[in-house]
Image (cartoon, rainbow, N blue to C red):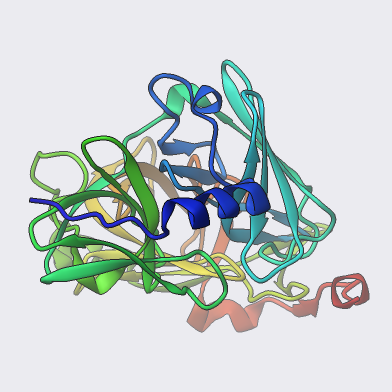
Amino acid sequence: MSRIQPEFKSLALLFAICVTGAVPDASAQGSEGLTGVYSNKGGTLAIVEGSNETLVHFSGSFPQGSSAGTCDCALVVQKKTVTNWSLHQAGEEDAWTLRVNPKQFVLESGPSPSCCGAGYPGKDSFARSTAKPLSICKVKVSKAGFHASDAANTPRKAFVVSGDAVEAYVDPVEPDFLAARFQGPQKATAGLLKREDLDCAAEGAPTAAKAPVAADKLQPFAGTWVELTRQGKGFVVLKPCSAATRSFTVKPATGEVEVQLGQEATTMKVTSVEAGKGAGAWVLGLTAADGKPEALQWKTADAAKGTVTVNSPDLFSQSHDYVRQEKKSAFPSKQETGCDEFER
Protein backbone atom coordinates (compact mmCIF):
# COMPACT_ATOMS: atom_id res chain seq x y z
CA MET A 1 0.00 0.00 0.00
CA SER A 2 1.25 3.45 -0.80
CA ARG A 3 2.39 5.67 2.03
CA ILE A 4 2.20 9.37 1.43
CA GLN A 5 2.75 11.26 4.68
CA PRO A 6 1.75 14.91 5.05
CA GLU A 7 4.67 17.34 4.97
CA PHE A 8 3.26 19.83 7.47
CA LYS A 9 0.87 19.93 10.36
CA SER A 10 -2.42 21.57 9.45
CA LEU A 11 -1.51 25.00 10.85
CA ALA A 12 1.89 25.00 9.16
CA LEU A 13 0.29 24.04 5.87
CA LEU A 14 -2.20 26.87 6.09
CA PHE A 15 0.65 29.27 6.81
CA ALA A 16 2.61 28.01 3.79
CA ILE A 17 -0.40 28.46 1.54
CA CYS A 18 -0.90 32.03 2.69
CA VAL A 19 2.78 32.94 2.30
CA THR A 20 3.60 31.35 -1.06
CA GLY A 21 0.26 31.14 -2.83
CA ALA A 22 1.69 28.04 -4.52
CA VAL A 23 -1.14 25.64 -3.77
CA PRO A 24 -3.53 25.70 -6.73
CA ASP A 25 -7.22 26.31 -6.59
CA ALA A 26 -9.03 23.25 -7.91
CA SER A 27 -11.11 25.49 -10.14
CA ALA A 28 -7.93 26.65 -11.87
CA GLN A 29 -7.06 23.10 -12.85
CA GLY A 30 -10.29 22.00 -14.46
CA SER A 31 -12.04 18.74 -13.67
CA GLU A 32 -9.39 16.59 -15.40
CA GLY A 33 -6.30 18.70 -14.72
CA LEU A 34 -3.65 19.68 -17.23
CA THR A 35 -0.94 17.17 -16.35
CA GLY A 36 0.83 15.95 -19.49
CA VAL A 37 3.47 16.65 -22.11
CA TYR A 38 2.77 19.12 -24.90
CA SER A 39 4.97 19.79 -27.92
CA ASN A 40 5.52 22.18 -30.79
CA LYS A 41 8.01 22.20 -33.65
CA GLY A 42 10.88 23.39 -31.50
CA GLY A 43 10.21 22.26 -27.96
CA THR A 44 8.32 20.55 -25.15
CA LEU A 45 6.16 21.75 -22.27
CA ALA A 46 5.60 19.30 -19.41
CA ILE A 47 3.05 19.98 -16.67
CA VAL A 48 3.04 17.96 -13.43
CA GLU A 49 0.11 18.95 -11.19
CA GLY A 50 -0.33 17.97 -7.56
CA SER A 51 -2.55 19.04 -4.71
CA ASN A 52 0.47 20.63 -3.04
CA GLU A 53 2.20 22.28 -6.04
CA THR A 54 2.53 22.31 -9.82
CA LEU A 55 5.81 21.85 -11.67
CA VAL A 56 6.39 22.94 -15.27
CA HIS A 57 9.36 22.03 -17.46
CA PHE A 58 10.07 23.87 -20.71
CA SER A 59 12.74 22.87 -23.22
CA GLY A 60 13.14 24.19 -26.73
CA SER A 61 15.36 25.68 -29.40
CA PHE A 62 15.29 28.96 -31.29
CA PRO A 63 17.36 30.65 -34.02
CA GLN A 64 20.51 32.25 -32.64
CA GLY A 65 22.49 33.83 -35.44
CA SER A 66 23.37 31.03 -37.83
CA SER A 67 23.09 28.44 -35.07
CA ALA A 68 20.42 27.47 -32.57
CA GLY A 69 19.95 28.63 -28.99
CA THR A 70 18.26 26.45 -26.40
CA CYS A 71 16.11 26.66 -23.28
CA ASP A 72 16.00 24.14 -20.43
CA CYS A 73 13.79 25.56 -17.69
CA ALA A 74 12.47 23.87 -14.55
CA LEU A 75 9.68 26.10 -13.24
CA VAL A 76 7.37 26.12 -10.22
CA VAL A 77 3.88 27.62 -10.29
CA GLN A 78 3.54 30.40 -7.71
CA LYS A 79 -0.04 31.46 -8.38
CA LYS A 80 -2.90 30.13 -10.50
CA THR A 81 -6.10 31.44 -11.96
CA VAL A 82 -8.26 29.67 -14.52
CA THR A 83 -6.48 31.42 -17.39
CA ASN A 84 -3.16 32.64 -16.00
CA TRP A 85 -0.29 31.02 -14.08
CA SER A 86 2.68 32.83 -12.55
CA LEU A 87 5.89 30.78 -12.43
CA HIS A 88 9.51 31.13 -11.36
CA GLN A 89 12.73 29.15 -11.61
CA ALA A 90 14.30 27.91 -8.37
CA GLY A 91 17.21 30.05 -7.25
CA GLU A 92 16.62 32.66 -9.94
CA GLU A 93 14.72 35.93 -10.22
CA ASP A 94 13.20 34.98 -13.58
CA ALA A 95 9.44 35.57 -13.86
CA TRP A 96 7.38 33.51 -16.29
CA THR A 97 3.70 33.48 -17.21
CA LEU A 98 1.65 30.63 -18.66
CA ARG A 99 -1.63 31.66 -20.26
CA VAL A 100 -4.13 28.80 -20.35
CA ASN A 101 -6.34 29.26 -23.40
CA PRO A 102 -9.02 26.82 -24.58
CA LYS A 103 -6.87 25.51 -27.45
CA GLN A 104 -3.30 26.36 -26.49
CA PHE A 105 -0.82 27.33 -23.80
CA VAL A 106 1.21 30.50 -24.27
CA LEU A 107 4.43 30.61 -22.24
CA GLU A 108 6.12 34.00 -21.81
CA SER A 109 9.29 34.98 -19.99
CA GLY A 110 10.76 38.19 -18.70
CA PRO A 111 13.82 39.67 -20.40
CA SER A 112 16.87 37.38 -20.81
CA PRO A 113 15.77 34.34 -18.75
CA SER A 114 18.76 32.57 -17.21
CA CYS A 115 17.67 29.11 -18.39
CA CYS A 116 17.70 30.16 -22.07
CA GLY A 117 20.51 31.11 -24.41
CA ALA A 118 21.03 34.69 -25.52
CA GLY A 119 18.41 36.03 -27.89
CA TYR A 120 15.44 33.94 -26.73
CA PRO A 121 12.34 35.70 -28.13
CA GLY A 122 10.49 35.30 -24.84
CA LYS A 123 7.41 33.47 -26.05
CA ASP A 124 6.34 29.96 -27.08
CA SER A 125 2.94 28.40 -27.67
CA PHE A 126 1.81 24.78 -27.42
CA ALA A 127 -1.43 23.35 -28.79
CA ARG A 128 -3.40 21.46 -26.15
CA SER A 129 -4.30 18.89 -28.81
CA THR A 130 -0.67 17.63 -28.70
CA ALA A 131 -1.10 16.36 -25.13
CA LYS A 132 0.58 13.07 -24.23
CA PRO A 133 0.55 11.40 -20.81
CA LEU A 134 3.53 11.44 -18.48
CA SER A 135 5.67 8.32 -18.27
CA ILE A 136 4.73 5.66 -15.74
CA CYS A 137 7.65 4.74 -13.48
CA LYS A 138 7.87 2.16 -10.69
CA VAL A 139 9.65 2.85 -7.43
CA LYS A 140 12.54 0.35 -7.18
CA VAL A 141 13.90 1.22 -3.73
CA SER A 142 12.27 0.50 -0.39
CA LYS A 143 11.47 4.18 0.18
CA ALA A 144 11.79 7.15 -2.20
CA GLY A 145 11.35 10.59 -0.68
CA PHE A 146 10.01 13.62 -2.50
CA HIS A 147 12.25 16.68 -2.77
CA ALA A 148 11.40 20.36 -3.09
CA SER A 149 11.98 22.31 -6.29
CA ASP A 150 14.30 24.79 -4.61
CA ALA A 151 17.96 25.31 -5.44
CA ALA A 152 19.02 22.76 -2.80
CA ASN A 153 16.37 20.13 -3.67
CA THR A 154 15.43 20.03 0.02
CA PRO A 155 14.07 16.62 1.17
CA ARG A 156 10.41 16.51 2.17
CA LYS A 157 8.50 14.21 4.49
CA ALA A 158 6.27 12.75 1.76
CA PHE A 159 7.48 9.50 0.22
CA VAL A 160 6.49 6.52 -1.91
CA VAL A 161 7.55 2.90 -1.43
CA SER A 162 8.80 0.02 -3.53
CA GLY A 163 6.37 -1.00 -6.26
CA ASP A 164 4.39 2.24 -6.25
CA ALA A 165 3.64 3.63 -9.70
CA VAL A 166 4.26 7.34 -10.21
CA GLU A 167 3.76 9.62 -13.20
CA ALA A 168 6.95 11.41 -14.19
CA TYR A 169 8.36 13.65 -16.87
CA VAL A 170 11.46 11.81 -18.07
CA ASP A 171 13.67 14.61 -19.33
CA PRO A 172 15.81 13.43 -22.31
CA VAL A 173 18.91 15.01 -20.71
CA GLU A 174 18.57 12.54 -17.79
CA PRO A 175 18.75 14.87 -14.76
CA ASP A 176 19.36 13.62 -11.21
CA PHE A 177 15.74 14.43 -10.25
CA LEU A 178 12.49 13.97 -12.17
CA ALA A 179 9.31 16.00 -11.76
CA ALA A 180 6.77 13.41 -10.62
CA ARG A 181 3.35 12.96 -9.05
CA PHE A 182 1.71 10.20 -7.03
CA GLN A 183 -2.07 9.91 -7.07
CA GLY A 184 -3.32 8.94 -3.62
CA PRO A 185 -6.89 8.12 -2.58
CA GLN A 186 -7.79 11.76 -1.94
CA LYS A 187 -5.00 13.91 -3.34
CA ALA A 188 -2.03 13.92 -5.70
CA THR A 189 1.42 14.68 -4.35
CA ALA A 190 3.86 16.38 -6.73
CA GLY A 191 7.57 17.00 -6.32
CA LEU A 192 10.98 15.78 -7.37
CA LEU A 193 12.06 12.15 -7.08
CA LYS A 194 15.57 10.84 -7.61
CA ARG A 195 15.94 9.35 -11.08
CA GLU A 196 17.99 6.48 -9.67
CA ASP A 197 15.08 5.46 -7.41
CA LEU A 198 12.73 4.89 -10.34
CA ASP A 199 12.42 2.26 -13.04
CA CYS A 200 11.07 3.98 -16.14
CA ALA A 201 12.11 1.28 -18.60
CA ALA A 202 8.47 0.55 -19.43
CA GLU A 203 7.69 4.16 -20.32
CA GLY A 204 6.00 5.02 -23.60
CA ALA A 205 3.87 2.82 -25.82
CA PRO A 206 3.53 -0.85 -24.91
CA THR A 207 4.66 -1.93 -28.37
CA ALA A 208 8.20 -3.22 -28.75
CA ALA A 209 10.83 -0.58 -29.39
CA LYS A 210 12.27 -0.54 -32.89
CA ALA A 211 15.76 -1.96 -33.17
CA PRO A 212 18.52 0.10 -34.81
CA VAL A 213 19.44 -0.82 -38.38
CA ALA A 214 22.40 -3.09 -39.09
CA ALA A 215 25.84 -1.48 -39.06
CA ASP A 216 26.57 -2.29 -42.71
CA LYS A 217 23.54 -0.28 -43.85
CA LEU A 218 24.81 2.79 -42.00
CA GLN A 219 28.43 2.51 -43.10
CA PRO A 220 28.03 4.80 -46.17
CA PHE A 221 26.79 7.57 -43.83
CA ALA A 222 29.35 6.96 -41.08
CA GLY A 223 31.45 9.73 -39.60
CA THR A 224 31.07 13.32 -38.49
CA TRP A 225 29.46 15.93 -40.72
CA VAL A 226 30.00 19.65 -40.10
CA GLU A 227 27.52 22.39 -41.00
CA LEU A 228 28.27 24.67 -43.95
CA THR A 229 26.87 28.20 -44.12
CA ARG A 230 26.16 29.75 -47.49
CA GLN A 231 28.04 33.00 -48.05
CA GLY A 232 27.88 34.72 -51.41
CA LYS A 233 28.19 32.07 -54.11
CA GLY A 234 29.94 29.55 -51.87
CA PHE A 235 30.06 28.06 -48.38
CA VAL A 236 32.09 28.65 -45.22
CA VAL A 237 32.46 26.78 -41.93
CA LEU A 238 31.04 29.35 -39.53
CA LYS A 239 31.93 29.52 -35.84
CA PRO A 240 28.80 30.95 -34.18
CA CYS A 241 28.70 33.29 -31.20
CA SER A 242 28.51 31.49 -27.84
CA ALA A 243 27.99 28.06 -29.40
CA ALA A 244 29.73 25.22 -31.21
CA THR A 245 29.42 24.76 -34.95
CA ARG A 246 26.52 22.43 -35.64
CA SER A 247 27.44 18.88 -36.64
CA PHE A 248 26.18 15.33 -36.50
CA THR A 249 27.90 11.97 -36.20
CA VAL A 250 26.55 8.71 -37.62
CA LYS A 251 27.68 5.71 -35.56
CA PRO A 252 27.08 2.39 -37.36
CA ALA A 253 28.32 0.30 -34.41
CA THR A 254 25.50 1.53 -32.17
CA GLY A 255 22.96 2.48 -34.84
CA GLU A 256 22.79 6.06 -33.59
CA VAL A 257 23.09 9.64 -34.80
CA GLU A 258 24.49 12.16 -32.33
CA VAL A 259 23.45 15.71 -33.24
CA GLN A 260 25.40 18.70 -31.91
CA LEU A 261 22.90 21.57 -31.88
CA GLY A 262 25.30 24.31 -30.87
CA GLN A 263 24.72 24.57 -27.12
CA GLU A 264 23.61 21.01 -26.47
CA ALA A 265 23.56 17.61 -28.12
CA THR A 266 20.94 14.92 -28.60
CA THR A 267 21.13 11.30 -29.73
CA MET A 268 18.65 9.58 -32.04
CA LYS A 269 18.40 5.91 -32.95
CA VAL A 270 18.43 5.07 -36.68
CA THR A 271 15.59 2.59 -37.14
CA SER A 272 15.34 2.48 -40.94
CA VAL A 273 17.25 3.33 -44.11
CA GLU A 274 15.38 3.57 -47.41
CA ALA A 275 16.27 4.79 -50.88
CA GLY A 276 14.89 8.23 -51.71
CA LYS A 277 13.93 9.78 -55.02
CA GLY A 278 16.86 10.32 -57.37
CA ALA A 279 20.54 9.43 -57.30
CA GLY A 280 22.24 9.76 -53.94
CA ALA A 281 18.95 10.27 -52.09
CA TRP A 282 18.07 8.42 -48.90
CA VAL A 283 15.54 8.59 -46.07
CA LEU A 284 16.81 7.71 -42.61
CA GLY A 285 14.16 6.95 -40.01
CA LEU A 286 15.22 8.41 -36.65
CA THR A 287 13.64 7.69 -33.27
CA ALA A 288 14.16 9.82 -30.16
CA ALA A 289 14.51 8.45 -26.63
CA ASP A 290 10.83 9.25 -25.98
CA GLY A 291 9.76 7.31 -29.09
CA LYS A 292 9.11 10.37 -31.25
CA PRO A 293 9.93 9.55 -34.91
CA GLU A 294 11.60 11.88 -37.39
CA ALA A 295 12.39 11.30 -41.08
CA LEU A 296 15.78 12.61 -42.22
CA GLN A 297 15.93 13.37 -45.95
CA TRP A 298 19.51 12.88 -47.19
CA LYS A 299 20.98 13.68 -50.60
CA THR A 300 24.57 13.67 -51.81
CA ALA A 301 25.39 17.14 -53.13
CA ASP A 302 29.00 16.60 -54.30
CA ALA A 303 30.59 13.22 -53.62
CA ALA A 304 34.10 14.46 -54.47
CA LYS A 305 33.85 17.35 -52.00
CA GLY A 306 32.08 15.20 -49.41
CA THR A 307 29.01 17.44 -49.15
CA VAL A 308 25.39 16.50 -48.52
CA THR A 309 22.08 18.26 -48.04
CA VAL A 310 19.76 17.10 -45.27
CA ASN A 311 16.30 18.07 -44.08
CA SER A 312 13.87 16.97 -41.37
CA PRO A 313 10.82 18.45 -39.60
CA ASP A 314 12.67 19.28 -36.36
CA LEU A 315 16.41 18.75 -35.93
CA PHE A 316 17.36 19.81 -39.44
CA SER A 317 14.50 22.16 -40.27
CA GLN A 318 16.83 25.18 -40.47
CA SER A 319 20.19 23.53 -41.12
CA HIS A 320 20.69 21.72 -44.43
CA ASP A 321 24.26 21.78 -45.82
CA TYR A 322 27.04 19.62 -44.36
CA VAL A 323 30.53 18.39 -45.26
CA ARG A 324 32.51 15.42 -44.00
CA GLN A 325 34.75 16.55 -41.16
CA GLU A 326 37.89 15.29 -42.89
CA LYS A 327 37.09 17.43 -45.95
CA LYS A 328 35.99 20.64 -44.25
CA SER A 329 39.47 22.18 -44.75
CA ALA A 330 38.48 22.76 -48.39
CA PHE A 331 36.09 25.45 -47.13
CA PRO A 332 37.17 28.69 -45.46
CA SER A 333 36.53 29.00 -41.72
CA LYS A 334 34.97 32.22 -40.44
CA GLN A 335 33.93 33.62 -37.06
CA GLU A 336 30.40 35.01 -36.88
CA THR A 337 30.36 38.79 -36.48
CA GLY A 338 28.50 40.76 -33.80
CA CYS A 339 29.46 38.40 -30.99
CA ASP A 340 29.87 41.24 -28.50
CA GLU A 341 26.09 41.53 -28.11
CA PHE A 342 25.94 37.91 -26.89
CA GLU A 343 28.63 38.59 -24.32
CA ARG A 344 26.97 41.55 -22.62
